[in-house]
Length: 164
Image 1: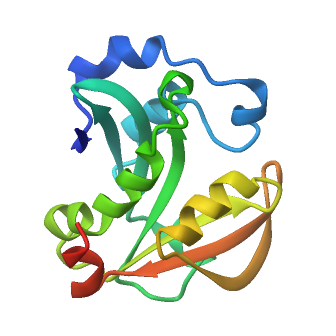
Image 2 (image 1 turned 135 degrees about the horizontal axis):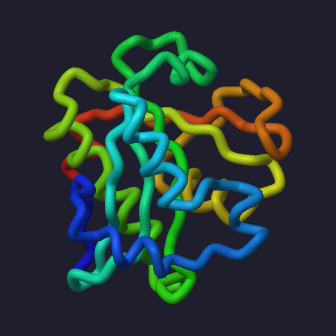
């Protein structure tokens, strides 16, 4: 069973053994790096994706000002640093975690009405996951740390929550 959980230190050891290839790291930060950022950035909430209580993925939800690179909607949240542990890839975990995300956001951040993200234009696999999960291309492009980023968003609605 796939589950989204707010990070706590019981997951730290699993994240220390979380290998990401050079290719993956060109598109996302390592979970330990993102946890360090979360320690100094109060707008970051680190999220663990588990499959049967094993760490299968990681991402951050950010309520800070960076979201305004992607949208002008104040009631939005930025999804950043998303990754699936290499040993868990190809099992549909990314798709299932994206399916659960609207309800998770609604419960954890009740004022949020939209989820936004940036995906590298060279990362076609991630684009496919986000598109299949209902994210739409906002026709906004900007330079990120490793290339052009495509701004995408998903409106949180009763329909997106009912699908869970």
